[in-house]
Length: 115
Image (cartoon, rainbow, N blue to C red; front, top):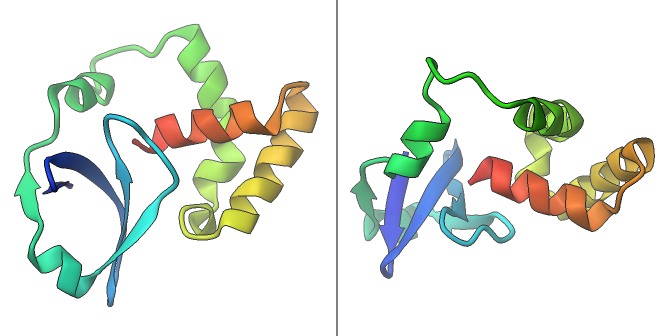
């Protein structure tokens, strides 16, 4: 589900009883929590074409995309990564060490994956 807030499109990552976690679609930054009250004023919008194209089941992912997804899998599987900065940081560091890269790169790839 996608919503529009002040002319920005956000991807809803996880809904909870008192609100939801969202991330900017165009310029991904850390996930943010929007309360149920804030959600009432948001406008629901259709998924952007770029998102639909990237999630098309008929499309075969490239080797690079497959590699990045496999690298990020521990973060993708951990539901708390969306809402817990310390958990995201911890897993980014572990993955970076394993793949000989920087935690910052892992974190940025994760944000792009979420968006």
